[in-house]
Length: 321
Image 1 (cartoon, rainbow, N blue to C red):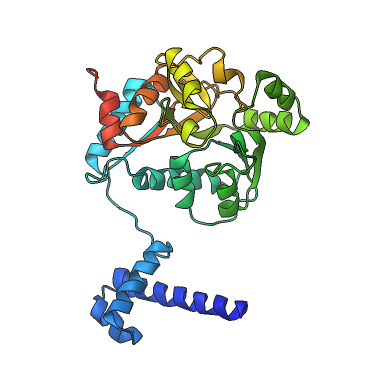
Image 2 (image 1 turned 90 degrees about the vertical axis):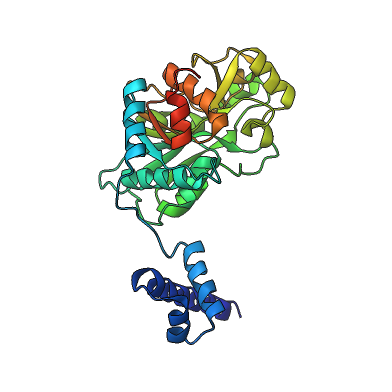
């Protein structure tokens, strides 16, 4: 029975791929597709939709959008960035992750399709997960990908937004998770875990990485660290009172990009934030809640690359804000 179901599923995907080709490549209407495939118009419509949802069809916009290019160049000039890519903002969904996720997927694939073996560092978060979800599946087993942060949730389960597992499935690269909590229960526990041979080995791998992709988040009651159960609201409030405006891989920092002394930073299990004088550290972030953390990260700088959207880029370039 399982084999039959698998065969049915493969047949359905093949039919969807055929419908997608007829619609987007051959230029057929849905009525014409229905006739050619011997199905109803409604079925033809569902098949075309299935081709998109299963990513059997991919779109490339073969024309640079001048406004986005201009914003990217302005960000590079203003903040001394090595990389700045700006994508259009969906007016109805200004904080959508789709566009930034797609652009990040392109950059990740570009790095990982290199024939020369490399080590890539990867952070965590919703935007990075959206990027990895949009990557093509391909074999780049010559590379190593190492997580920048702990990959275990407070209850001991794998952290949902720890993208190291997703990217391992997509690329077949040798991937190295951090088998520790994002934030230890105490500074003493952090010290003990940090001495474990596996953790020391991962930290050495991260030192090898020339390029790192990270998410950036704010610090507040709705922060990912709170939503995902790594910190309590009182703990985050203590960070805010100490001046924290953002965090990268769990490390909280103030408006000048300086790490907060003590508090949860004394328990963070993540690798140290990279030295951007020797590495490319690309932040992937979009939305109004990311503007203050990004300003702070760009100030020090903690990052020297950015993938974002038009509205966020405009806010970062607004000198009056």
